[in-house]
Length: 328
Image 1 (spheres, rainbow, N blue to C red):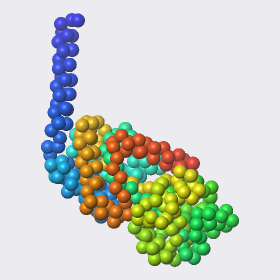
Image 2 (cartoon, rainbow, N blue to C red):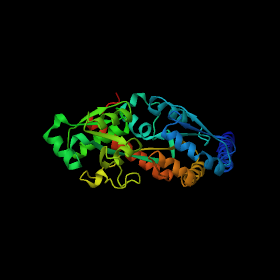
Image 3 (cartoon, helix red, strand yellow):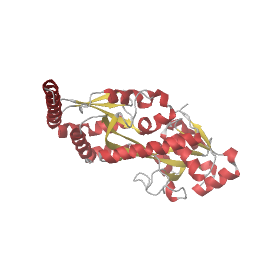
Image 4 (cartoon, one colour):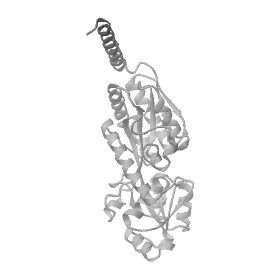
């Protein structure tokens, strides 16, 4: 080996080892400054409430101030786009919902400023929010069998209201049609509240609603709960069977959100963050605040969260392609 080349080679190796040593030292010292968590929804939303419920335990566990920044817009693309572009040092994290990680890339890929799989490092899921399919009392529907029979006998007279095009409730409604073999009209509302009003008044026979918006109406007998969208029974409506147990094989659709970091964040830092979030999600005070929202704490390992994101993306991408669902 020529002397000059040898010196250059040795120098390059020394630099690489130095950078590697620096990265290891940085990971070992983590965290030594405040951590910013970007929430892709305005203050007061479910994701915002959940992360603020975890904030005290996270701060105590990590020994640093946790700064929460609300950066909403473009279905979560703006906030999580900022996370994807941040330094991969563990000091900028994001709370991402199902939509931005698994639905937006299929609904409008041209508008995506990042690749959810390549540009982000999953830390943990935070919580799941199941939905419930309800019927108005005026509809005369009392079971899933009734829905399917009526949809096939009177296809023009059946409709399902949901909280907006491209939302998890919209996808849940479309999944119902696919699994049940029906062609029920799907009606988009601007949020859950107006959909609740119309199904309660009997203007539409069915609606997919979130549980906080419907639980009291169900308990008061004003709406009939036909099935929950989770794979198993949920603590909020323990007497309501999952749709998966009523002939709709492998039916599962829940709203969810979790924590992500920029891709390239050292595994040691991801592990530290995961442990802190898992501990916070087990805090009794935090659990109580989360369940008030109709959500259930759902901590995972980074590896399991990554697999879940990929499987959900594949599932909803397939449904969107097959049904032609649009965001607007």
